Length: 313
Image (cartoon, rainbow, N blue to C red; front, side, top):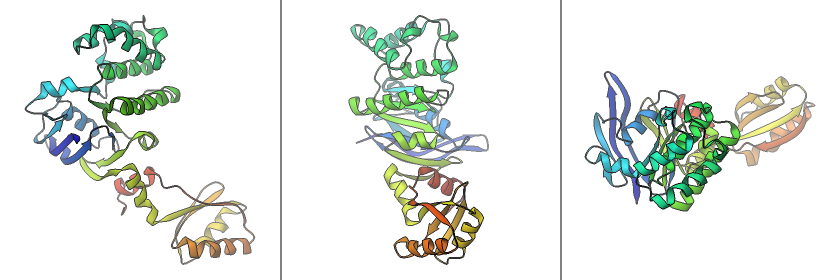
């Protein structure tokens, strides 16, 4: 069953079309990533789904509730980490008091509040700061506290806008682990906006690539990555003259593309089963010492650049 259904969703700001007739279906329990450059329409989409903005056209269903007709119900079952997440906590309250306040606001059972708060603050390495005023916490710690606030009431759908943007690598890893754990334990659905390609690739089951408000590509992470396998790329690490090795590779009619790096050339080869040995022999015959000849794993960055930058993926 789809937990989020987006139908023709459109948002205009004057002449600017921020979200352009978006259609998406996100199954229950999915970790979904909306990927795109700054200004692509990701944050506007989150605001529409969380009922903070009203669409110009179209609508969406979140947990079975219409964002236009039933906004209160949508808010009851969602947890939101907006782009300016630091503004969603109260600076004059302690970290603990913030979570107590929001727990009661969301009708978390009284007997569970303290246990949930301790569990979340401990996991996010904030337990030692529980009595500190939220306004005195660092930007990264306020981001972690805001995330605790968003998930405290165990909402069915979590709308997270750049959830690790202000975090150090250790804290970002904790957030990714938390998202995966919650998805598995409570079957929660995550809608994550990001331009962080490695992060999306690590945690998301499905991905849509968006630019100028339009969805350019949508599918499972594995499906999108498999689109790149039609062109097989290989890293050839060498000792010697990179430019010479590059020239040799470019002279071969089965080599489609060559890119130079510090100690390697990256080549795209037609029918590598038949042609890899020929390329290797040509390089060796010209005195090029080959340290490694290995297939490059397809990454979402490759696909992202092809799609957003006007490639033919």
